[in-house]
Image 1: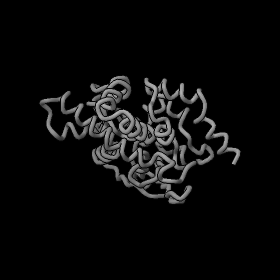
Image 2: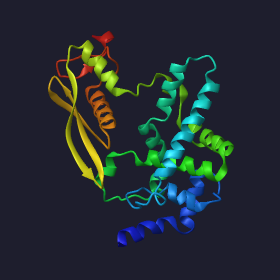
Image 3: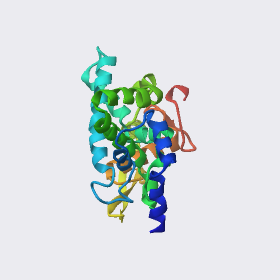
Image 4: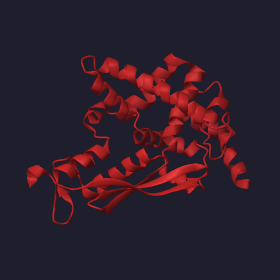
Length: 254
């Protein structure tokens, strides 16, 4: 109880208001809305007390705003390209990294004693909830300007995103096929963490566990495992080849 009492003190007083204003760039009208957006369900279970409803709303608003941004930025690109770019921009890991850089980790209320939260992207979810709060508080037009000024322009570099590969499973499958390897993803463990199922998935190459990932659904866990495998093995693209040490090198250099 003392832990939660001390935790909620973070959302009171002038220091919280100052930190929030520094992140937002403006003084919010409805402060309670933003407090809810910054409260994870690990400390508040009520649907009207945690940020899951605002996350749901913010996810839809952010997706629509980015779709509009891409439609105007790339007037001659096809639908498939626009869809892929939007996926890259709202990628969970991408949003989580942006949220941390913005400072949301410092003012988000969550149970730091819950080990399962260390492998989740709760700050990216918090960022989406914050977008939902701004939308309700300030309206669509001001939210559009805020997303452009505080998320897209300082954190999303379009030239880099155009060449970024975010589907690590596809990259790993492509590499395995070209190198005569058998790649499978195996669920190693499934357990309850605070009422949620936490999955551990392994990337298995020729029957050998090369990397593992944990997440609250199998799809994300397998992507995390694939990303870890790609980094561990130094796979740049599907044309990379295996060296005798088990690492990879570029096909052009072999």
